[in-house]
Image (cartoon, rainbow, N blue to C red; front, top):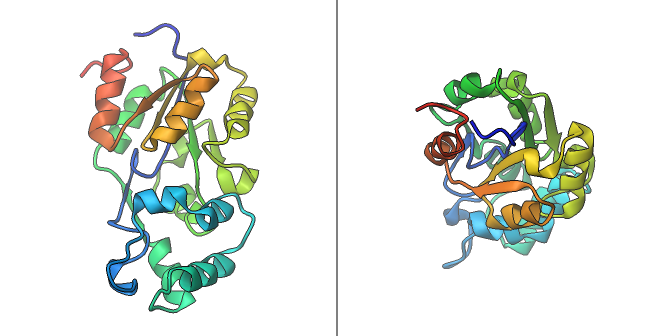
Length: 202
């Protein structure tokens, strides 16, 4: 086991939680337009929503107008609410295998629509000492301030944190503060990372 790791900090979507194909169905978009995960990461309206600066209705209506979406705001809200499918198969088993060895926490860019599902429906919140949710903190990754908040709240040295995220920009930001950030995509890569650092045996 790597003796420097005290805290394992997980992102959720694309790491422990499986997401659907796209936040907005392609058939709702005009022509050859798309709004995939990369577009989501780069979207200013998405970031405002994930920082809790706008509510769901404003988010959906702005997105509908900006992307010329052929659906109502209510349909957009419903589809986006359902975008996270649920924990990847194997997420519970991995969390159980490390929960008594390390302090576990989540750092997630999330929002008012996904928060109830994270905290109740997905059944994983009990594993974590802290769930740092962007919309509740009014901060979001990759801004350094949210990582600094995690370090302060967890009262841990940055180099004692293993952080896994599916967004390379978030990993780069974490490393600037000395956090051991690893880019992963899905539960198999989470498993491999934990094995490589000696957190799990197989």
